[in-house]
Image (cartoon, rainbow, N blue to C red; front, top):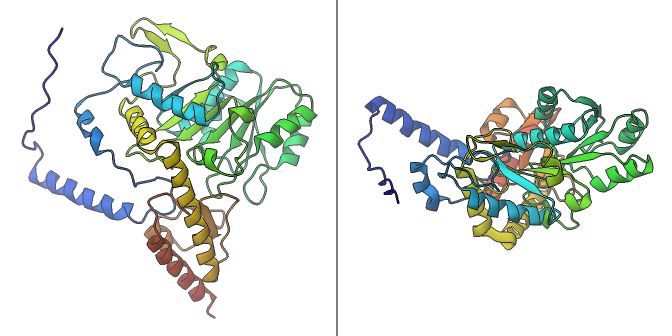
Length: 388
């Protein structure tokens, strides 16, 4: 047996004094800015210090996580366990699911659309006005025919417009891109209603992808549970890992029916594995991070995490209203929406703003102190703008 490589010994920095000082300043700036990020959905209350020694190694989970490779410096065993946890929560069919840890929600959505195209090469993708901007890019990559459907005022898909549009395009199989938490208002499209429309129109050939990047980490714990997962008719689901779950680097989870994945699998002799992913070489650190999260939190911890964020979202909505700000949120959302604020407040609190609205997202690291300061700033600006 080969002798294990010794742990790399610490050595004096090879950087100049100026570069070392620059990194110290950068770290201080990141710590400061992280404390005021209230409008973007990245949880920052995690502790992965137990994994720091893994940064001494280049972990590459090249290829299919369920097939061992001749490249052994990987974390496949942890990836499989993390995927099994989320497949169970997404109510995936026991013998017909597959997945991998991605670079983020956009890759997961690209993968779902890729599977849909291979299943229905002549299909048409239907997506709403409030769908994430990256989806049009993915559609361009895949050269997929597509039609944008109107959104309701709350950001949810307009089901009447979907029905009427499907009626005049019944010659092409529909590929439905459903939002499970839109970017600005956290609206959730209802797979139950979507399937009812498809059944009503007698359209048997269909593919539904759930973009659950925003809400996938907590949607299974909502009551009533949204209709968004495999049991509700999804063929593939994308979840973000660095949002509600929390990760120091962008990552995500994509799950799909294995019968769809089998269409694209091909054996690669070089790695002794199957080519079933988008990128080939993949980050081997993020699967361990996702494994650590589910082992440390478990279902009970994630459920409590969701409960606390929802409670703070309710508090935030009411606090804005008490201060005279016209705030609102969708049912069971952790995103609170209010009229667009000035550029200075957008920068101060990193508030995402578009189409006349701004929002705060009650990720688990946000506290009441944050909310009280934000509400005070927004209310003061509103009063100032109302003065003659």
